[in-house]
Length: 192
Image 1 (cartoon, rainbow, N blue to C red):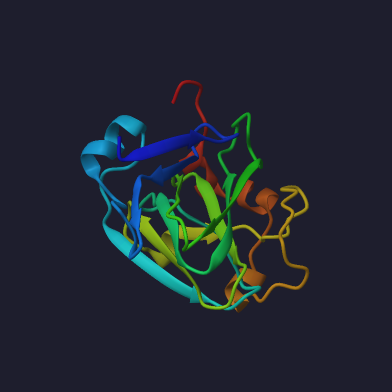
Image 2 (cartoon, helix red, strand yellow):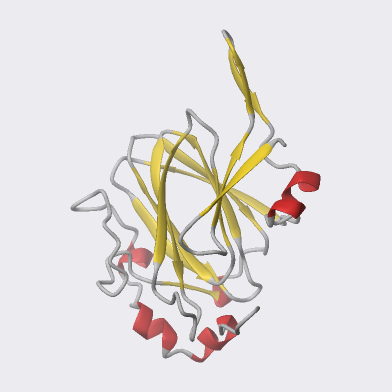
């Protein structure tokens, strides 16, 4: 099997490790392979691929999009990052809980979180590059986010004074999101 999937504390959030082939020249890995992804519960259709480059201490997120729903399969291409996914589904038994993993460009790791999870990361090295395979095209009118330091989330970020964009610094709390009518788009239902 070209991928090994590791479950996380949130059933919908997955970590996949591609099989690598290494020798004295370096390594090779298949990063996206649809015929292998489907049986593992990973998405098989991407409509947009993004890449960001960040200085050490930058926090991006926590972002999500409901229209169209945009799941993200993220990986670190260069540098190191602390990546996070938070359940933002009203009524979910894991609402507000998060999963965090550390990844680097030295070893391929794929971090999958569906649209109903807020995602973000902290760059742990200068020149950290993160690639995002997105299941929905970007729509500014259908996106939102939650402050990285919302105390309700209890995320222990590995940086005391992060560098934030003005947009991310102005994000609201999880409670703010749940009070919005759009949050019903991510409503949790048992068994689905």
